[in-house]
Length: 70
Image (cartoon, rainbow, N blue to C red; front, top):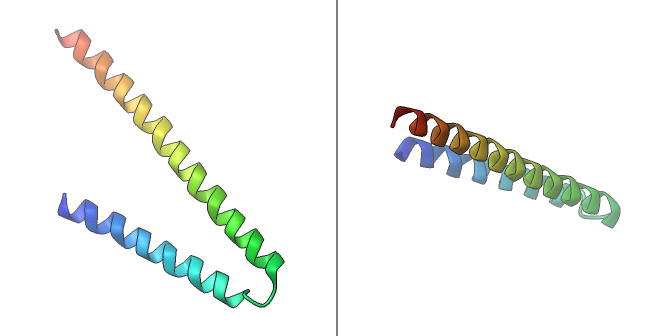
């Protein structure tokens, strides 16, 4: 579990650094900064949606398998 936590925290830190660099590099104009923030927000929402869908499918399959065994 420690390795999994380390990987997730590492990805979180890496994406925050990338987002910060992009936002700071386009800090002179408001429009590119808005679009970059919007793309980052959409990517986070899509990632969470995929995780929820895959997790739901996994739980459904697990429950079906456990019902067949009993």
